[in-house]
Length: 177
Image (cartoon, rainbow, N blue to C red):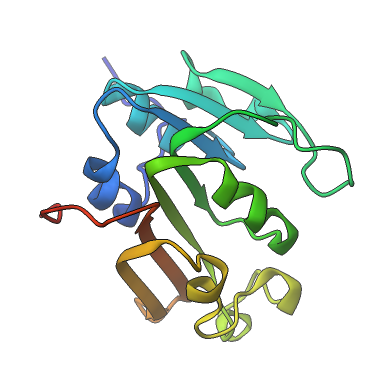
């Protein structure tokens, strides 16, 4: 038995805070890409909705509800009226979507968000300021949520990222290790 060549490890940040998501809760993997975070949550026993412009690439999301939608073309939010126990977003930024993301969280729901930040242009792609969070911007965009953890800065001398783990309501009694 060989290693699956398409298996990509989940973000260490997302894996670290996955335990904040209520057991068996519904997870939205927004801009899911290859589905690495869908796979993480499916393996933890969660129902997952994996949404991306091209879900054909979401090879790791087998078992998830797959939804294809272009979130930036002005079309209505494809999940109107649905709520989730977690929304997971990595390596994607479309600022107009934040109010919808926050409104999609159930009470006690968790936002796990990680993407590139200003300064990343020194290291490569993405370099367009439209795709880079400003310092502290993720905290502003997640306003109203209880911040469990937040990081913003250079990682490994190779990229600049901003990350948040936040809860819609009071924070957890204990943090994941």
